[in-house]
Image (cartoon, rainbow, N blue to C red; front, side):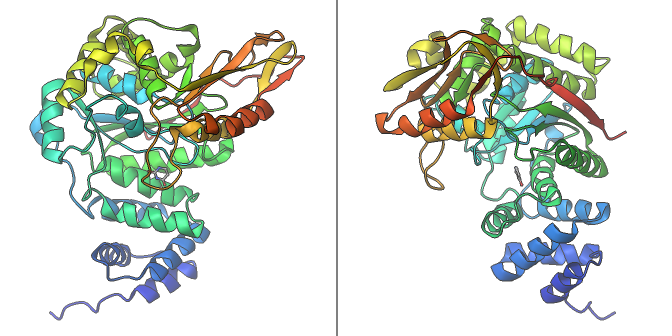
Length: 445
Ligand code: URA
């Protein structure tokens, strides 16, 4: 039999541009060409725009995700002999729930191979938070990653150079071509990386509201459905929770500040402003325990997760993991003393009333501009920059009461974020209608 005629990328682009469904071979050969460097950026960008305009059928999305997942090395969890389960958030402000959830899940006897990202846009990144712990190494080989998980039940690392290289190339081009916000491309990007972790279960935290990437409820719901269908289609039990992101989650937003908040909780000190963070983490971890067969229902899982957190079992796992990845755990003896911003400034209420609203994306940008985010791609982030919220949406406030404290390592960075927060935090005579923290659960089956 003669070998098949090679597919020309321009034919693939034109067929998608004209609204046709691509075949598995067209998608597979295009992604292989992108990773091999045989397809120009112009052609790749053209296909991305055609996908942005026309979307993808369920089969096309499954094929694209799988082709991306297999574009480099993948983690092999078979030797762990444990149920592998992970959680992923679409990104929020002050969302440090991974730092609580992974040790809880490990303490329950499951394995969490967590490959995380850095700050993106106005949102923080788990790797930037973890790297504020002196000595902590997020750049392990997949072999060492597996060894750490075998020893303590979880590990938290960054994407290695060879893991899902197709996503790195496509993501950079999407950023340049206005094609980031396609729910189909977001799904393929997230799921190709998560499925490369060799997971049996996955719980997705899809944010909705003013601090989410997709702000409209319908768009977040569509994304949740695509993520779940793609995970299930690849043989991974997948659940998505649509959760409110209308204000920072918990008490702090900023790199070390968020680790500090979690250390307090893991050590048994639960500040009242951390209540939403603890509840969300317990619910997400509860679903993971349920999928992994530890808890009889998601609700029982939530209670089990809280028990593992409050008994100190999760903290033991956390300490073990941090030590194995080279981190200096002595700073956890007095986390408040490790917080060393050059400047702090308290923003106070100018009138009596209720904290009635904010643009949470603007709050996230204020945190980034205090130094917690990057000025240029690949640049440094400040460990001690960020904010402490003193009130939650709907709280009664009186004139002069602290609303938020701003922290920065560089006094020159204070002015703009202060003005941004001053503008966006609204005080009104009547309390706002607040949204439930967990808005909806999307199940695959
Ligand atoms: N996170 C990702 O990993 N990819 C996207 O496209 C969006 C958020």
